[in-house]
Image 1 (cartoon, helix red, strand yellow):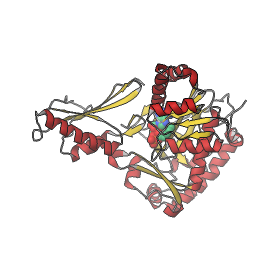
Image 2: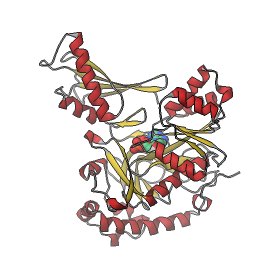
Image 3: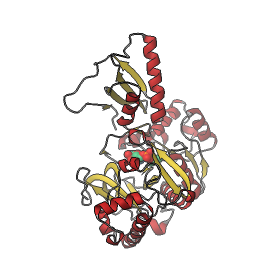
Amino acid sequence: MKRYYQPEIETASREQILEWQNERLVKQVRHVWDNVPYYRAKMEEKGVTPDDIKSVADLHKLPFITKDDLREAYPYGLMGKPLSDCVRIQSTSGTTGKRVVAFYTQKDLDLWEDCCARAIVAVGGTKEDVCHVSYGYGLFTGGPGLNGGSHKVGCLTLPMSSGNTDRQLQFMTDLGSTIICCTPSYAAYLAESIHERGLRDQIKLKAGIFGAEAWRENMRHDIEEKLGIKAYDIYGLTEISGPGVSFECEEQTGMHINEDHFIAEIIDPDTGEVLPEGSKGELVFSCITKEAFPLLRYRTRDICVLSREKCSCGRTFVKMTKPMGRSDDMLIVKGVNVFPSQIETVLLAQGYPANYQIVVDRQNNSDTLEVMVEMTPENFSDSLVKITEMEKSLVAELKAMLGIYAKVKLVAPKTITRSEGKAVRVIDKRKI
Ligand code: DLL
């Protein structure tokens, strides 16, 4: 049985998809030119006008948008609709403290939820399912996006949000959850908890939709085996909408990009040059249907490969590999985006020098974040009470900036190894 939410779109011919893309891109460029002065200025600077963009083949003429643009235009500068037409804001952390704030009209929400519904149906979701959503709700897009998709499919939706494993397991067993949506690391943690408590016979899960952070095949096999389910990947980013920009089908060999809404390109991260299909490079998205936050040629910094090889599921949308890394220094810790520059901003504001080291590790399938910070000769102390107080205060400031707990360890001045070249600020010990 084939599993599609919108079969006429998901299995459309390549010619049809290109026709939609050409028509929508031309319209979108006009919309952005008319309504987003920030992007219009960028186009003028590059000497491009809407008349130059007649089809997808002209996409490369448009300027890129980067996270720096989001910061510069924060908060309203990239909006394509007046605030009065928007109904939702979602957000995530950005570089040096400025958050990424994305706006949605009702139509934008509708399209985003369609994308999430496609992902749920692709893993076998129907109105008979109980869809247990353990992504965070609130500003993070994971919870709200899959919640909306689950409603569209008609699943009985459990808006669990993240945390409180006891309660998660109680609902899962009492209410018979059949699909679970969460980060892969939380899925692995849940799998272990279920195993430890001997609950395997009491759960009815059949599939999981896991994304928001990198995970590899060995983790997939481990989760599938422990939970007796099929584990599927889902990808997305707040700037482009949230989860559901792409999703895995039953073939489990990469994620189909929802090309009726997003045009994907692969570029060389150093030169910005568009690379031929099959090349490994940075993924760039142009949103061709979004109204409120219509980013064009947005540089995701995610490194991956695109493939148009025929998929046995029948979908004709291009597939992307799992992201293989990033072309910037963003870390994803417990599904939360963390930039070293955010940590540095906090340290400097609190009077510490920029001599620090961030250590990321994974224990019991859960990410840990530790920041080692040098004291200055001025604030140096050998009193344990004083040091603990200083550490506590930094933990609170970092929590306010990042939204997650980071352990802080203050060390004596000049103890963090100096490097002759680039300072080694981040040590990522996770094997993913
Ligand atoms: O993580 C949206 C999301 C929520 C996706 C739930 C999937 C499930 P952001 O917080 O803006 O949005 O982070 C976006 O996370 O640029 C990737 O680097 C990374 N990422 C997202 N999905 C995956 C994935 C959400 N499946 C950033 N595999 C992206 C690897 C992923 N990395």
